[in-house]
Image (cartoon, rainbow, N blue to C red; front, side, top):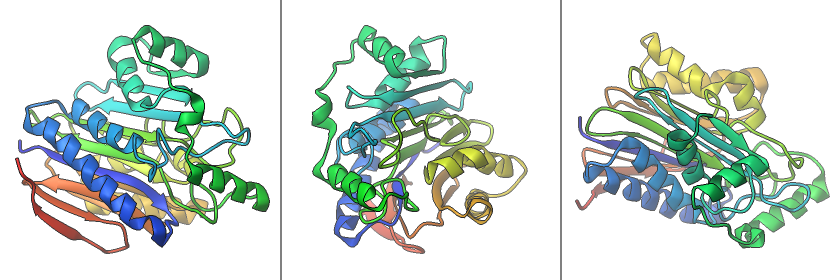
Length: 312
């Protein structure tokens, strides 16, 4: 199997001022993950590397740059899943670490449990050697501005970050490696102005993340409460299991969720045969993928750019 990697940088009302930064970020992330695959790394290692790249970038709502809850704090969550044996690892209510996705991966490999949260997740991370960072070091100026805007308006927008500065978004990655194994990783700071302790779709397997070597893999982004009610990732997988192609399954599930729940979302999908699905009902969603050593990317509806061959 030729390796394939696809990433997204979040769906929503992304302002023009942030478009280029997000496009640069997803192209960098997909290259970082693809490098792992080219060196015979696993799909799990590749999706982690891609998400780690975006967790370091303030243009994304994950790791550094995560949005703030009502107390002005970062509370992050992440999940990762192996399609080989359906192993999962997820964390929620993470405050003091830069890379929640790496902690989630360690939950998958080193814990008898699948989802750890809050103080227990912090204790687990410390036991596994992860270093804490000052909580304020995770807060970007953009996240502060988004919370202030939310507090002024007092209502949630159609996107994860709020109204005026919309769509910083969840990040995610889906990969298939040379052995045909599929993995998915998703990470987020959640929803700007969320209640302390709010948990969204990202750490909930079947909502934000799903992978099955026999079918494919999906990572979602958008209005978290709607995604978790609709089990969006698993909805796409079930359509594919029943014979629907990746593109159609992704579009039908996302539009179905939006029609039923009146909120927007996006998803990236990869089938076991290497077919790609990308769809979003929001105004914009940053994405990029590498297939057959060629990089493609976009952010607008019905937009596909090609970067040409990736140097290997």
